[in-house]
Structures are given as structure tokens and as C-alpha cells.
Image (cartoon, rainbow, N blue to C red; front, side, top):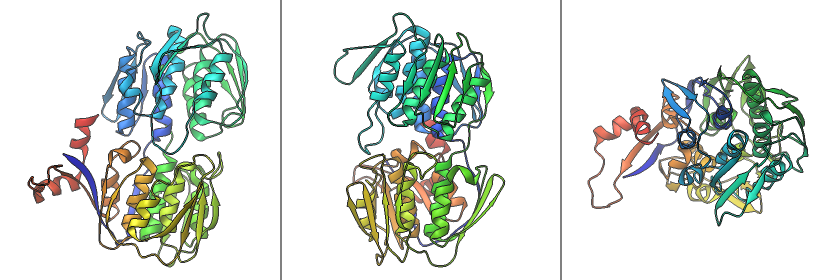
Length: 448
């Protein structure tokens, strides 16, 4: 059976949504739990990347299970080899190597996978680990074997680029290493601060999170804790862009505006009304959208690379010209072909997506190229007239739990459905379609 998302566009969005916990925080927290005792992570979204992380934990010998909306992890790793097929599914699998090195002195895995949005090397991760005493072994194509014959030790490390993944890897390695690590040129994203807060609550000693220089005094043993991950600023950005594209008014609660301020500022410049209060944002768009001019992504606190395709989807509905350049990944706009199929006037020049006014969006058949690009196609389909069908929603499931249900709660005509790959097979019954439109929890239970 083939899963797909069906959207009947042209309806404004109205209502309220509470933003869930951030995937980009949950995954490193799950890796960090290998260093600690009993850990409970509160209100974790049921994502396929989370399921893969739990499989990695179990493969390493830890106990990891769901208890309601929480995840419980206990035990320390017993096996230094991570399940290869699972590790290949996502970029964040590299984060599990540092805890294995710290606890067992060895980590063996497949090279990480993830979205095809451009080069995503792990050279910064490995260079930092080498400075801390790790040795890389020749393991054959697609395999990575690291050992720390004398254990990991503190070091002074300077990253030539503020890589989020490299920063997280080195924080995880340094938390239980001998001595002190000074990490300069570190990423400043909120997810880094969340990881440091979690480890500190477990007994680590990390200072400077949120700045470009981190000081980490290694602790041999860490304890467990109960922790609530920070809200998902990219999910909030997605819904804000959806309201901008389709029109309407929505209240997004549980995620402070400061976490996704660049997105809100650009949407406000384009003609949306943005009202900020506490940990909520009320965003509305009832009139015209105007072109945003030239927009660039950058390292935090600049516009997040993950938000670029989502903003681009809103820009398709503007009267003026817009362009958005992603300085992080060279193939960020895999969704451009889908935008063009919808009727938008777009062109990709290197890392820049150029959008000209005058395109009329009409529903069509589309395929999600990657996680954020797939979500961007859903956002654009909400603004298009007629019906759109988005295939390969498994990309979207990596980062968005109950995506169709949340959009449906805001008034969108959207549903998940299954279709046989055999064209001669019977069509999905209307009763089955209605069940899938109501919710996908039962479908998620089959894959997580």
C-alpha cells in the first residue's frame, strides 16, 4: 500500500494549536540518555526519526520504551555496534557514537543518512573526536568505526563552522571525558542550550551554552532526570507559513516568538499581522501578501535553513518578487519542481530560489522530496485551488507528528489515505478514507 496526503486547497485556516516538542532537540537528548541513568522525556512527538533513535538505543543494549506520551530510557550501552540499516535512515545517528565512545571506548555504525539536500559531511565531528583521543579505523565503504584506546580526554577545539551536529557530538563526548574541554566556534541554536540544560540536570558541568564558546568539565558518572524538551520552532514556522499562504488567523501557543523571530519578521513585512504574547503568537492574513525581496538563511539567530522552503511556499502567494538563498545546503529547494507543477513561477539559481508574481496555484500530483520540502508542498497546496496529492509522506513523518490532523483542526480539507500500488486494485473505500481523515494514530502504531 502507498500512503499519500490529499489536500483540497483554497480554505483559510483558523483556530489554535499547541506546538509540540522539537524533533531537533529530542534526538540529541535520546543520544545523551546513554550517558545517564533512568531518563524520562516528557511529551515526545511520535516521529519516525524518534522511532529510529529508540531502535538505536535498544541495539546498543539500553531499555527504551513509550509510556503514554513520554519516553523512558534506562541502562547503559552494552553493545558498541549500532544497527546499520537504522543508522542509515537519519542524520542524527552520528550523535550516538560519542556516548558509545565515552562508555565503551568503541563505536561502530553506518555512515548517517537523512534528507538529500546537499553535502552533509561529518569531518568536523571526527576532527574534534580525534583531538579528544578517538581513533578512526578503516572499516569499508559506508561504515564508521571509532575507538578510544585510552578513553576520551578534554581538549581545546575550534570549529571552523558553527555546525549544530558537530557541537552536539563534542558536547556529548566531553560531558564524561577526563578533564576540561573548551569548544570555540560552537553553534548557538536553542537545541544546543536544551542539550546542555539536560546534561547539567543529570550532573554534567557545561557553561556557555547559547554562546560561541562552551566550557565543559568532564564528569565520570551522570545520573538520570525528568526533562521536557523545548518546543519545535520549525513546526511553529510551518504553521505560520501555512496561515500566511492560505489566509486566516491562528494562535500558536507553547513556543515563544523569540525562537522563530526571523520567520515572523519576514511574514510581517509581507503583510501578515503578528501579535506576540508570552509563549504564544497570533498570526493572521486577510489581505494581500507582498513580495519579501531578497532573503537569506544563516546560522542562529539568523533565519533557519529548515524554514527556507516553508517561507518559499508562502512567497508563492505574494504579488511581488521574492528570492530566498540558503547558505547552508546547496540543494535545499528540492521542492521547486513541485512548486512549478502547482503553477508557480519559480527558478533555482545555485542556492537561490527566485519567485516571480503572476503564477496561479492549481492542485496537482506531487511528491515530497525531503522533510521540509515535503511540508512546503503541503503548505503551497493549502493555497492552491482544487485538489493536490502529495506522495512519499514518509519524508514528512520524520519531523511532523499528526500533521494532517493538526491542519484539519484549523479548517484545512486534508487527509491521509492509502492506495494500492496495483492500479487494478479497488479504490480505498470512503469509510476507510474517513477513518484516515480523522486520525493517523493507528497508522503510526504500525511503524513506530
